[in-house]
Image (cartoon, rainbow, N blue to C red; front, side, top):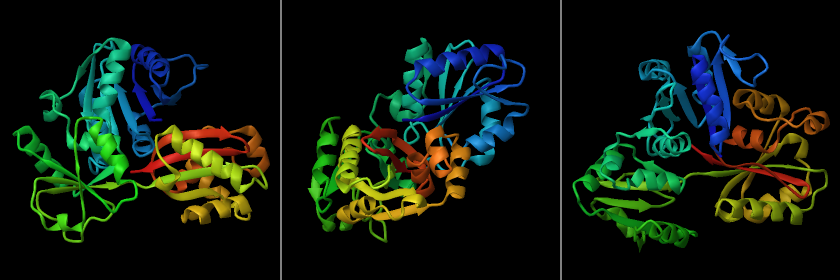
Length: 353
């Protein structure tokens, strides 16, 4: 589930922000300028916008500015790094007439979010990326939907340009990947039919898109490599929880996002659980690393990302969120599954950026 920050500078903008919070399926935090809303309303109030944007930029998946586009551009400009890592940025006028996809349209999901919000509030979506205006499914949009990281970033433009020119781009999947069939099925569902390949594809020219876990040290020209992002499982559990219950919870959590436990790259939890035999057995069974984090580091993450805390858990171990906080301690990313309770176990799944 996406974490969205909405910034409002006027009363009308705040009213639209509250409307959005109930209309979209996401974890929404509203930042409103002091004095424009009732003090009892659940918002983060600010005097100056820039410090709030600086804190929020790397803590949220999407930033929405209900104000002039020029203000939004000036606010985010100092923090922009790469289309592969920057959050999606949208702008909406305070009357809710237009929703503009400003930054990270494909990989960050700004275009998709723009369409969803426009439909929810009856606004006109404004999307300017070339492939979308031509009605073409961009390879980096496909990659984002499959949690694949494009390598190198420079090849995205080359491949998209080839697609726009009508040049056939060949999709290939590394046959040595254990879940190669998964990617084949998912691509076929959107009309892309990929060939299974072995390492010999490294010697070929392009344009080619190759899904692989192991791109070569020397990258081929005109080849866009799509590398699976790490999937982190944050886990909280009751004392002496069995391996069977933990495994059942992990399988259910992965099933909820259409994945298998084998897709998990690492497990993470609080150091209060570093002697839990069931958790240790779980990591050993799947052959994955298990990381533990102390309360200080996890509380810093909870505060930074404004994670919801459970009073019971906080009273028990000193912090109020284990699964999500542990996952974010392990890797910066976006939750595929927010903390979800199972029998004696809580699981959160996070895709690394």
